[in-house]
Image: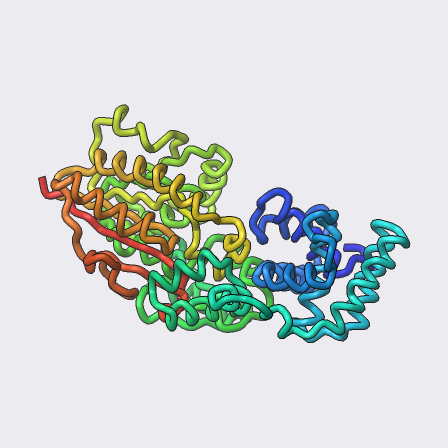
Length: 449
């Protein structure tokens, strides 16, 4: 990386990519790091942290910006400039950075990119921001709007959460997702014994804590260098996976020798975990519609030494029409609104709209119905999402059980979350608070005839 490149510049480029291309913060950062040839991981990490913090607080930052602009609107600005101002406002008002330093940095970046006239405009705006009293953003707002700005959530989602879990728990969840998310890892026992892997991590300066609920999950407490730069990660001894995601495979509980079908398998986190639980004995059909993601999954199989998974590019909704083989276990971890993943992907808050939920439940329904046709008698079907909405979870399972009496809901064990709603007490939900994980829903069903 050339010395002149600042973390602010890296962050603004990534934020602009997130906004214009709809990329996740992680993918946007990877693209910018490649493009700008950034090799210093500390510099990159600092820029990534800035991206995260700005995305978390986007509505409050935009409110300050618009109140400062008065008649003009931030929406009409050049996206790069808008994101530079968002970042500067974050640093001044939330990041406790010296205002003069922030203004100088923003003016310098603007001058290089847009010229003197625009740099003067940025200088004038940020001088006003400096004097702007933070309390002013709460003026003339109703209760929901105040909560929305205070906890950095869109109003529709604040309202939804309160209705779903009550005001107290909704506030706890929103507070939790404004902290740094925990890093969970899964130890890959296909490559080595758990204790050997823990020793490897210790040697590389990764301090961990073993999880009390899941035997192959550990939590990172501190590190000398990012986990992705360790030999253990690069050689497939560990896999980065959230605790709630790892729980799904344990609920499925595949046994060595089983035939398992994973209907939405890419990029392969759960598939490789299933193979690990099966000790590489049996067969897994790993299906996904996205050829790029299936290729990524194949690489993971090699790296993690998964030998029993067979990738297939296909539409899972029509697979039952072409296969006669019924499976012992079927997992359908469906595409969803990702409203449970906001803790680690704050951009989701601003992307997802209520209308998207209606559209996505139709896809989920199609996949669930198709999955049911692949389960043998006495076989198991597990349905999971990283969403917190009723529409994608309880309501869908309720409808499914009503229309498919051959399936019976059974306990989704190990049970480490909260009981699901609407009387579906054998299904489980997880939330950032109190479960310290991403939001998830898991239902386990047995085919009885």
